[in-house]
Image (tube, rainbow, N blue to C red):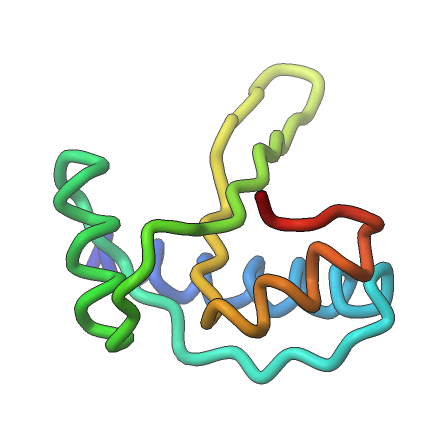
Length: 98
């Protein structure tokens, strides 16, 4: 039950985040269903890259915080776009890949 709740929460937050990010970048995103994983970071990212069929070592990591008067939750959004999509995202932000 707990992982189901976290997965649905992640789905809602990811949709909201991607809508805001797409508007900011002036791009259209076609997201896949988010997944929930609890493991070491390397294992989680490796499985995400393999599952998506990506053979790249690049991801866009965005730190986020949710807070109220009594509670603060820190987290990270990991966007794992295809290489061509990552280049478009970075260009829209005025950045380029090295």
